[in-house]
Image 1 (cartoon, rainbow, N blue to C red):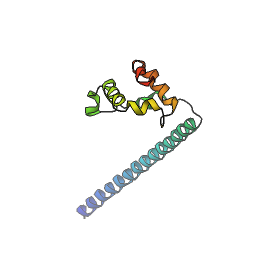
Image 2 (image 1 turned 30 degrees about the vertical axis):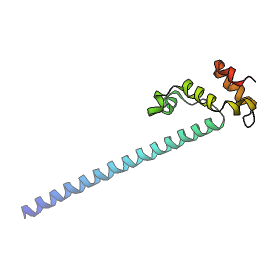
Image 3 (image 1 turned 135 degrees about the vertical axis):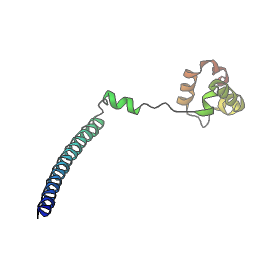
Image 4 (image 1 turned 180 degrees about the vertical axis):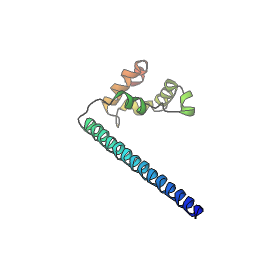
Length: 120
């Protein structure tokens, strides 16, 4: 009978462990609910700030800043490409048809040395 009592004692110990596990699970669920609530609150504040045109917090700005990898385009010389296009389509550019004057003006502001291609 002692063995049976020992066995029961062990089972009682197991039940206590199960109770502890349940307590741990409950506390984990409580933490998850709090975390979820905090997340939703932060998300709502961020959405509200974006709607109002407010500045994003510094930590969020760092997350949003990504450098774009251009690959072979990174090695291209923009001025050389622009000059090539201007030389090729010089006759179209002189006419000014199809290209709004504001675009030509902005282009000449960015590349003033190419203004000779836009003079008639």
